[in-house]
Image (cartoon, rainbow, N blue to C red; front, side, top):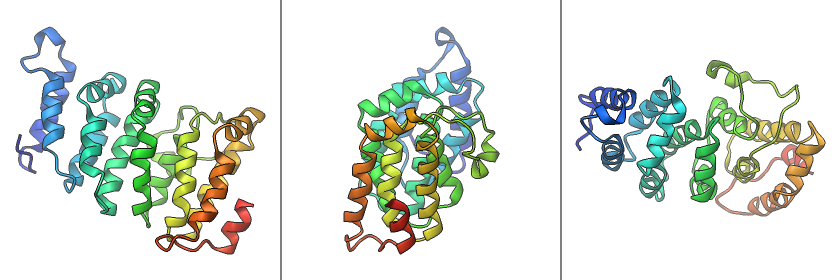
Length: 241
């Protein structure tokens, strides 16, 4: 399948219509169509991944559409393409799509964990040095029980009420990312957000203790000596301790 700016809207419209049509009335199998489409995408076509992110986000039946992408082996196909890519913009576009898949979806999170996706995909964060605060907050929100916040409010979401820490895998990925971030304020924001979430309840503290959070913090100090990582500011080291 050839994908370009001229036919992308038509392809997305076809996916949308097939998804809204009952299986017995579909002229084309949606799983096969999605599989061929995903296999045809080039990593450099970051605009396509952003379009797919919006497709899922704006869908009236996100849950079912996410399942369709899983059936089309999207996790496996996309990872095979991005595994050896170090372009920051391309990686962010792909991770935003993955984040949208994971958001508020236990089925996707279970499949993602079974695929070892947290290690495979989020190790790519080490190639992202200057993200937006919105991108960081999208990851932070994945740590807690599903958010009811509108998408436009995610950049300023507060952690000042009771929240349930449900996804320590994201917390571990965020902590390992800290030494690779150029902006000290971003490093502080991640540590502060994780700290607030963990300290919100005894349950959250127990979740942190049983899921390598302390070990990860110590490991981050080792990464601090990695020549490819930024030296941690004294303020960051103080916050860690």
